[in-house]
Amino acid sequence: MAQEFLPYALPEIGEAEIAEVVDTLRSGWVTTGPKARRFEQDFAAFLGDAEGLHAIAVNSATAGLHLALEALGIGPGDEVITTTHTFTATAEVVRYLGADVRLVDIDPATLNIDPAAVEAAITPRTKAILPVHYGGLAADMPRLLGIARRHGLKVVEDAAHALPTLCGGRLVGTLASDATVFSFYANKTITTGEGGMLVTRDAQLAQRARTMRLHGMNRDAFDRFTAKVPSWYYEVVAPGFKYNLTDIAAALGIHQLRRAHDFQRRREALAAHYDAALAGLPLILPPRPGAGDSHAWHIYAVRLAPGAGIERDRLIERLFEAGIGCSVHYIPLHLHPYWRERYALAAADFPHSQRAYETMVSLPLYTRMTPADVERVAAALRAALAAA
Ligand SMILES: *Cc1c(COP(=O)(O)O)cnc(C)c1O
Image 1 (tube, rainbow, N blue to C red):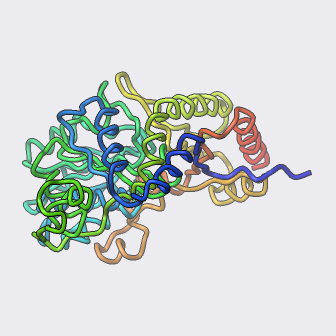
Image 2 (image 1 turned 90 degrees about the vertical axis):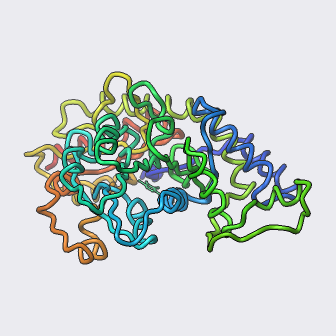
Image 3 (image 1 turned 180 degrees about the vertical axis):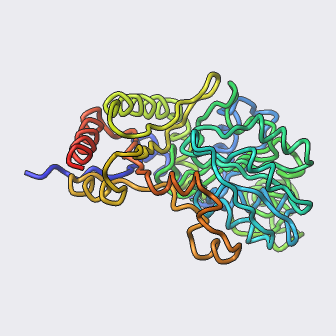
């Protein structure tokens, strides 16, 4: 009898999340209000700096990245350097603002942006570096921040995979960059269905992002109904966006956040189980975090070693035949028609990302998986590689 399909990803939503959502629905306040505010406060406290950090809840990480770059004044004529080995959201926000994207290659050991490639791509138009913590392993932030300091560049971290991730003993979100953006999309390490959080120590950046998050109005709807100034009064100071997080989503986030460390430990245990079960196969296993670092394990991507004897696409077919969902992170941006054509990009310009893409498979990794699920995936991989 065929086994049940093992999906690539599943959220873990508990009774506390469900009860909080029901409470929100009964409260009469369903859009941005007290729970979104509490989620922001809890998030800053989670990062260990409730005083110094501004946490701004938004309806996606894409929105948060857009707001951060907008607040930093990125616009036409400017360039932002980022990795080709990411999801298109990382780069598209630069184009929203009329600025240009400079894609660079990765370090094949970590799959994170290569600091040397970043430095080589700097031009007089460069304004910012936008690193991604691929899979949940921190990019080389000490070197990237050093490059930014030397060249007078801003740094915005795409931390969509990195909750929680330690970098040199400090949580991503508390480093010396200008802003850090987390995602709570359905398959991320914690979820609000759709949602994100922009974190910054820069009070001016925070104020601009709060204003632009809601139509360029100088206060949000919650303030309007609780402050002493006339409840109907607001001023529009810019053509802003509609990026606020609802209290329904924040209700989920409040409880997901409380479980973030537990989720991380369980993902880490599953990753260690994969490492042991896959040892000896012709696979390149994911890089381990260095001293002082930790891994959020959003993605567990293996790469076929030279001589593995099977094509990546065929391997994915074999896994699907065994009832196992998997994915590829990512089809590099330089291969997508929009990016390729706009910047006349060629695969040969990104040899490490290209090689990783051609050989990689992301295996199922989520908290609802059991050790037996890991064994099942490992067995299917062993069978596919043995038959190759
Ligand atoms: C998921 C993801 C995003 C976008 O997050 P949303 O919350 O869906 O907007 C951005 N960058 C990376 C690397 C992602 O994986």
